[in-house]
Image 1 (tube, each protein chain N blue to C red):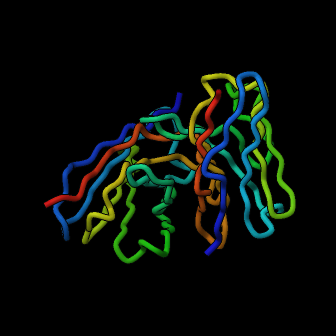
Image 2 (cartoon, chains in turn orange, brown; image 1 turned 30 degrees about the horizontal axis):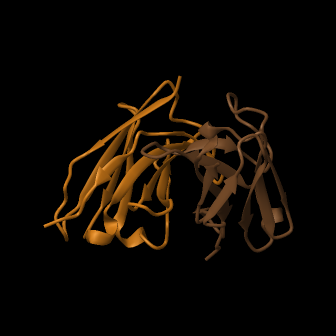
Amino acid sequence: QIQLQQWGAGPVKPSETLSLTCAVSGASFSGFSWSWIRQPPGKGLEWIGEINHSGGTNYNPSLKSRVTVSVDTSKNEFSLKLTSVTAADTAVYYCARGEQRGSFFSNWGQGSLLTVSS
Amino acid sequence: SYDLSQPLSVSVALGQTAKITCGGNRIGGKNVHWYRQKPGQAPVLVIYSDDNRPSGIPERFSASNSGNTATLTISRAQAGDEADYYCQVWDSGIYVFGTGTTVTVL
């Protein structure tokens, strides 16, 4: 059974960096893509970025200048860093497993509400 | 950027059929995936690649995709089907989600 367990430190102050990590169990890292997706309170889903097992990344152009997704295959974990945050970055952040790049998301983490507040 | 539009809300009587549309330019040429999200929970995949159901999703869920509209159909609607539903495609190197539809079972 594939499980994604995520965590992150919050709240985050404006202009600081938001960090989240997702641990994967029950699945190999190779052959899949690993994404971050967010959902502002009461709003829809927005894809942030993805990484594969070899570290290849792909980012949403709207966030690309502020986003870094990295992977630690030795720990079966991948991480998100979002810099220079503002109140508009307040959202529930999800990690998710993609069957392959450009396809669908089969498994999701439980979600982490990260609030940007001074 | 590619936009996917969904109705804000759909109401369906218990036991009847609900249809949720997802509009996008020539969406019929893309693979469309659908997710169900209940309050406070992560989304769950209910349909992938236009009309395929993951294991554990009942046959009451079906979908189609043609022209500029993809449609998710929920037959014999149950109270447990109340949720937000999102369509999703891959376009120009990024993942795009629809605006989301809230389904209410009356």
